[in-house]
Image (tube, rainbow, N blue to C red; front, side, top):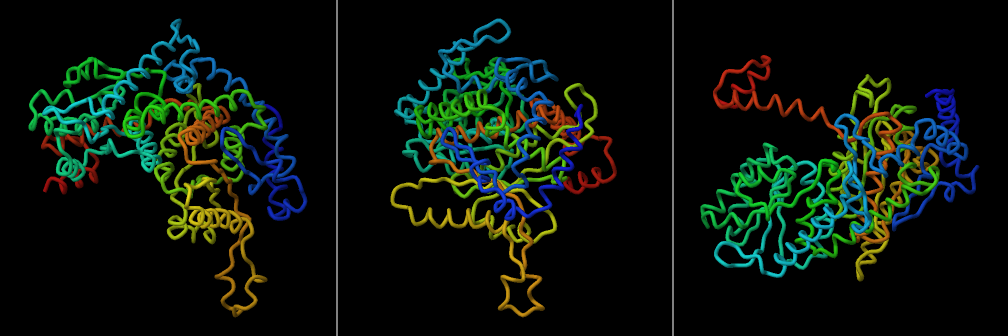
Length: 526
């Protein structure tokens, strides 16, 4: 930071910690109103955090000095914000109205986006309408989506979140890790004559995906011969490799190098969700995300939901030295969200170099983890309340339940709000007067522990689209604050390279490994 802002923020941390949050609520009658925003069907409350009425002015200076406004403008207009690979990051264009022209490298990409959407719609109508037949003339009933990382986490989140709204015409299954037990289970349970394979790999070179696809292709061919190749679709930017695998060009849905894997949920990668829930659900997803995009691109920075979340996390990371955040979803269908967010957040921000390739002087990414509602309470909330580390938490819930389940939702809401309140208030001796004095300390909870509450109006594709876009934009702003490239992942590549050597050694070839790795390989081979 070029000014004395760093010293101001250090001093401000001591100020906000000088009072408990409960005292700040008493001192600041407008605290809730000051730290609550609502947009695109999402309600955001930051008031139970270590902030006060003076925080916004300092945060404003922070985002101004970091160039957040210009960074938002740069990604919006299509600048090469992926500095390492000299590409724009235009996942947000996939959810914009497709009739709006947008030029990338001298070419309007909107017609290409529109063409892929039309093909996705046509495929979904054929499959869901029973017109896409298997090799023996039966209609497709099951889809196996084969992909990993960004090619799997997003569509799995969507299919899980909205399975309760599906009509069961098409059942979707996911195969990510090349696990023999999972592969054999799918082959045992499903009928190859009525199963469609979706092979999702941007490069069509991902080892795990091609291994799984090979097993499932042979399963289809063993039952239906090469005619069964008509039951395979590829989602890839490499049409030639897909064709070599046996998937003709007319069954390849493309996406582009300006869409990163962990941001690809808005692309053809979500075909399994469309097959499960229909194309209209996908359109609603895009529309909700686009509403959040408009908020992000136009709202003042200190009334901007993604900017708030990003600056809060950077505040805790750099000035409180808190290196993790838990995300607790009080909505069972959203169970995959913490894992989806792990990739989005940790792969984007877990960097050691700045955008110029030089060493960072402060940490960037933090550990993101989480769980589901009251199940999480019974698993790890003991540590959250009484452990020696502060763990900021995002509490996520849904306001409106399905009709007829209001009582169940009231229980969920009660637990969600109580946990946030309990973390802030804590429990001291005065609450335990009826307990023997010698037993009180072990029952006290220190409180003054921060949390953020996020409420979706309903669990609909539109609301979930806005919610996911909120966290995407949070990552964008954090990358600007940390001065890192959020769109590469060189750390992932090293393990892939070394895996070729360890696999060769496991197959019997001699390899040069450290003594521990050699011993492990020998044991696995024995």
